Length: 103
Image (cartoon, rainbow, N blue to C red; front, top):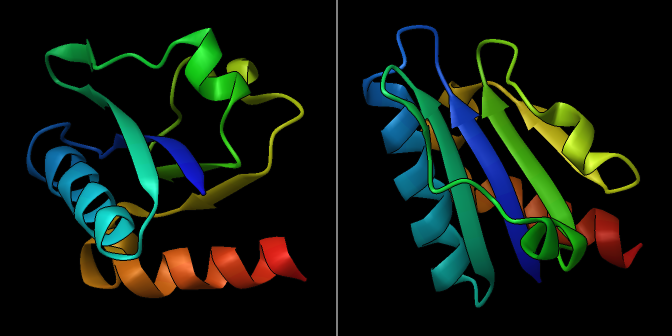
């Protein structure tokens, strides 16, 4: 499964980057590819390309705030969760997404 996503928290510091790492690690452990953009205090990092979004099976938005550029994901399967969800149980989230995409 190709996963792309955006992480952003209210402070734009710790949870933004922790959430990114949690998604990336869990996806790899479950055999998926993941590319995650961060929208933190220093702006957008690792910005997703149009091709990456086009090739994604699912978009995970782990955010506690409104993210910019959400319109890029129109027509894609988008899962929106708070950053706490991916920080606490990233594998469970990805496994639930797998089940939904299969069924």
